[in-house]
Length: 237
Image (cartoon, rainbow, N blue to C red; front, side, top):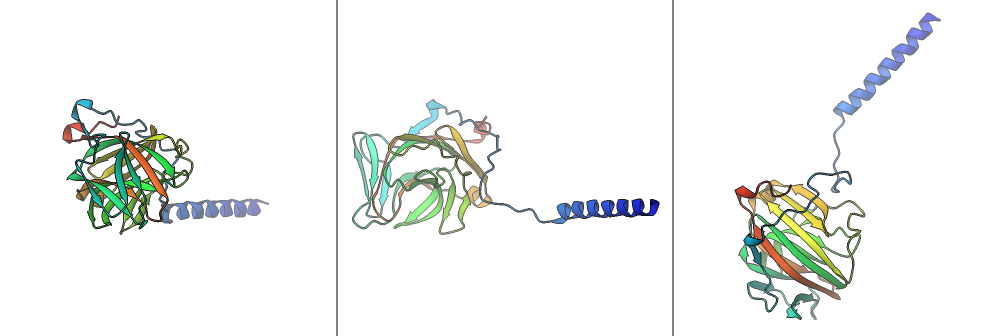
């Protein structure tokens, strides 16, 4: 009887050691979705209004460059992008480059709302090099980061995180870009935070996008930017 007990005890020890070994030496897997349990820095950054730039003056496209043949115009104080007859990609980029900043804007999606906000990007014709904060209909990862003509999706919000997004109504998007880290909020809810060396090394324009395919119309307003410097390292409390 004692021999049987010793044999069973030996089996238990071997099994436990095997499980620990697998846990220790098995490679860790990663996906491109943020964790729904991520509770760090959920609050939107505190903006210094005295240091804020209005990128859109509510009257015309002064300070912006149109790329492509899609429609960009101002109506009733709103900046509007709309698919043109060619139904191709189109961009509206800032004259100036911005590296470290907090960007706040509001958007309203009419019809198909597939669009985006590019940062640290350059545009040649209608080919953009840089990174996009996705603006899309519900369930299509608004607030995620996509690298055009490169690695594709870098990070997507967890499914259902964009539940506050309302088609046909105004939504607020906040984007903080500082050094290697990008953090986004949709209607006050943190969507993602992503750190990337390649992003940290880049500089470029902010650009609004209209997706190809036609049938798209998006309105924008209150496009405001606060530049960040080394004294703003803890602005995300």
